[in-house]
Length: 94
Image 1 (spheres, rainbow, N blue to C red):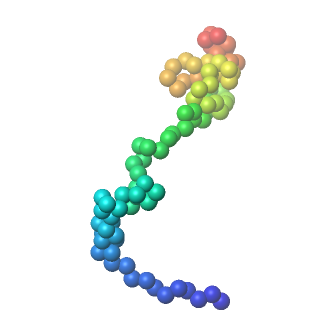
Image 2: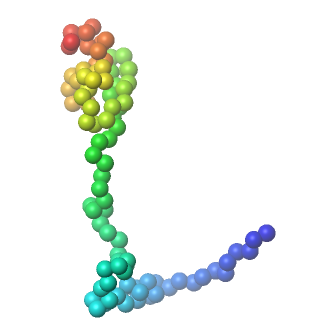
Image 3: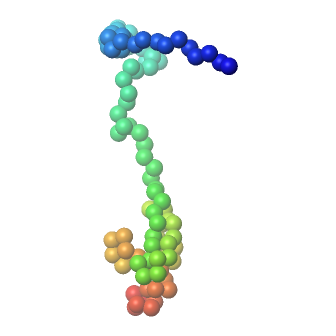
């Protein structure tokens, strides 16, 4: 059976002293930064997957946010409100 490593004690003063040990003279471009970068610098995906659901028969279709709802067989009635082609013909939207 494997043995556990000895328990290490960490104090809060050691983490602050390591962050303050970096000075402007130590600024090397290849050295890692002691601080995390902002979440704003992370690139986000351009398109997201959406589920389009018919409000009459509950038929659902997955589409990306860049797809045209008509190409997926759905008719847009309002903001995030859709009919499938079959139901749109029945109620007179198509």
